[in-house]
Structure formats: C-alpha cells, structure tokens
Length: 305
Image 1 (cartoon, rainbow, N blue to C red):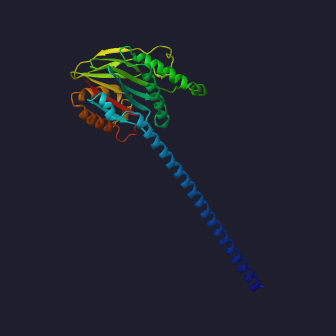
Image 2 (tube, rainbow, N blue to C red):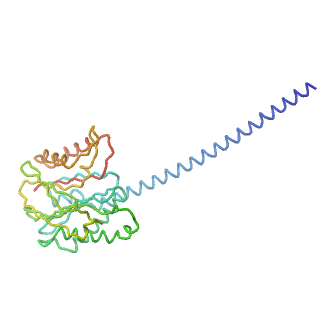
C-alpha cells in the first residue's frame, strides 16, 4: 500500500508539472501575440507620425512659397537683412513686401500661436493683405491705419464662427507692423498693432510706438488704427520685428531677453554692415537661448536707408 501511495503521488506530481508547462507555453504564446500587437501599433504610430511630418513639411513649402524670398525682398530694399526663425516647422510669424512706382511696403506680422495653428492664421493674413493691397493702389493716399482696419474687419469676420464656438477669452488674430516708404526713402508712413519700430540713427536707437491693440477681438476693436509719419535720413536703419526675440527665455538665469536688451543689441550693432549685423545678432540670440526651448517664432528685419 505504501508503494501504491508513493506511485500515485509521483503520478500527480508529473501531472502537475505537465499542467504548469502547458500554462507556461500558453503564456509564452500570449506574450508573442501581445508583442506582435505592440509592434503593429508602434508601426501604425510611426506611419502616422511620418505622414504628419510629411504634411507639415509640405505646409512649410507652401508657406515659404508665399513669403517673399530674400532676393525678392532685396529687390525693393537692397541693403537689408532678414532673421526669420520659426519655433516649429511652420511659422505663425510672417513678413511680406509690395511696391508701386512711388512707394515700397514692408510688413512683419505675428499671429496667435505657432506651428500649424499659427501657420494657418499667417496664410490667412498674407492672403488678406495681398487682396487689400491689390484693391487699393499704393499712392500718396495710402493710409496704413486704414489697411489695418480693413484687415481687422476681415479677420473678425473670417473667425466669427470660431470665436462664437469658443467660450474662452483668448481671441485669435495677429500683431503687425506696416511701413510705407516713399520711393526716395525720405519718409515712412506706418501703422502698428501691438508692435514697435526701431530706428537707428548716429549710433542711437529711437522706438516708434503705434496702436496698442491687436488685429482681432479686443475691447478697443471699434477704434481705428492710427497712422504716423517719420522723416528718414540717409544711413538710418529701420528695424521691424515680432516679439519672439524679446520673449525668449535664456542665459544662465533663465530670464527673458526683453525689449530693453533688444534695443541695446540693435544699438551695439547698427554701425556694422547689414550682413555682419545679421550674423552677429543671430549668434547673440542663439547663444542666449542655448540650452532652452525656443519660446516663440522670431522675426527681425533691418532696412538701411
């Protein structure tokens, strides 16, 4: 009887081992199945990411095709530089130019957001400006403030449905600078929306202020944008910019660049030739943000009279 009992215990033990091996095999099969599922999901995400990147890269090509090339800009303003650094592939900043036999126009704008949303707004803004300028001849009667008024009406109308669906207090739109130079470059007529223009003369910097409201929904949106004039002298440099450089965090102290530091940078570099200014100021800004993520799109344009 003892032998039979031992035999049965050994048999049960072997059966238990067989059952465990079966469970292990089933678990291994399940792991292989799950790994295959994870691999498929990973491939799907990778494909979606690649498709998204390809779409964004194509969007950048479209945006770059609309924004003037350096040669086109320098055909109007030969002694100039353009620092244009999007935060993402597609930019919420844009710049453009236009001309007539008597006048030349330079525009810098900063749309709400960056990346794809900002890029879509920038395309909307560039299209609207092109249409507005084509309908109104660039003559001595051109009023930059009125152009900004029309642009604001267009933006408010175009985005009305989106604004109504959005319960937040944040409104889409843009800040902008529009400068109209007479052909002999002795005067500018300008209007701005939440932007400032800097003029370098004899080693000093003058800040030209404009209207403190955006192109978009705002408590003062029914007020017209003001137009101003400023007399230019040979050798002056007119700087147009978005707020991306001023708002960039950097340095060992993790602080903003600020408008004061921007004015100082312009003053320290304004006596150099334009390409040296571009190289030196680009290096300064890049060193400032080294080790930090770029906060916003950055645009700075210099035009020497």
